[in-house]
Length: 568
Image 1 (tube, rainbow, N blue to C red):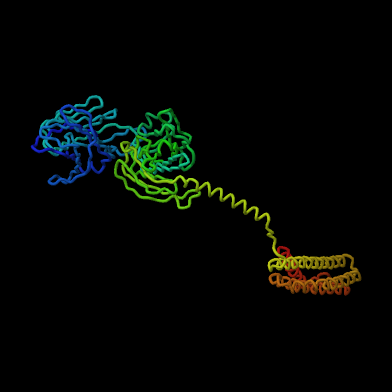
Image 2 (cartoon, rainbow, N blue to C red; image 1 turned 180 degrees about the vertical axis):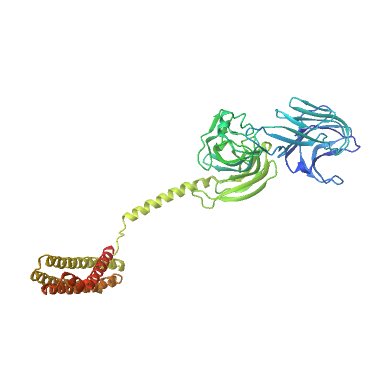
């Protein structure tokens, strides 16, 4: 919004300030205001006038006042040419608030056809330049004209102070309503020759919300008819010598982007993974490097960063901008000079090879617009000797690593033969070897068991009781021989301090095997005796059935214990 009043001092005293009034409902969305003035009947070269918020007495409480301070008082009868630039956010409201994919976006503009001035106005006019397209409706007064895309109200003469004449304009506006809910811009300075910029965007389409389903087929076939209210790309205008440029989101690198560069500028066209309709949002990150000598300078014993504050994308509104300036480790006496008020605080960031961390100056500002993309300066002191800290840390680290390797190669790391751990290992190895021998003896016992079973099968087939008795006698002799071999081995294991875990199982195995041998020999004798007495086969089975079940259970327990010992 630009208004150009010509101010005349009709009073008797010089005037050093000019009041500017805005309704509170507009003032809360005022993102920027600037005033330029020049004195004289003919407009000449204007100079910037300082502006501040004031609270004059005796004025309506529904208004917010700003004061533009003149460089020199305006004398009686003198004329001041004043140019005032104001930028408002969220001033255009979508109406309707929801539209389909094929609809154009309509917005409502509300204001006053009279400039809300605290002073009497002799003559004034209002010109509203629309973006083109159709105009649904507008407030009509007697001196209202719509010519092409320009709507004019006035001229109005002898308008009293604080005169307000409401107007509403309902028109088509399909320009991108790109709003950054939050932008975190990190500027990291490295005195090794680079300034790294990383920008994290959370973008939303702030226009009329999409109603119904989205058809990608319709959008791709007729994008200007089936998606006119959406936008699918943004332009970032980067410095000419920007390098190592990337564009990605949470998924990874986004290839739908284009880069152009020449000697004056570098332009990055960013295209999200999907077009943005009203209410849709996306997040992404862009990053690039800049030459240190183009943005960091020295003056009065200090270094200072001189870089723009806002986003390189001129067509977006940033509701919350956070700028983080990461200075080299060891920086001190940090100060900032910004062309507008910001919230400021300091943090510490740790990166590779940092000891005390890198100081971070944080600047925060709401409602940032392209007019805020001005240069600001961050001053700090930095000793060049600090540049040697990280290389020396690397050199020292590698040196210590090589020394450690040399020491390791020349050091005997073997365990002493007199140490308790070494002796315990030897004892455990002896126990394992003895247990393996014991396992072999028990497997021989099981083989003898199988021979006894085989002799009984032969007896049932041939009826040769004499051969069966001979087999039992041989088995008994083998059992006794194996028992003699087993005894010293069991004593050896029992006497070892490392057998406290294995001995209970081993003792149980010995008891089960002895009981199994007794049962087998008793059953064998019963069968042979029954065959000699010419008893029927069914009677024999009845006599040994209980013994047979016990023998099977014992055999399974013995095999389970042997398997347990094998696992150990």
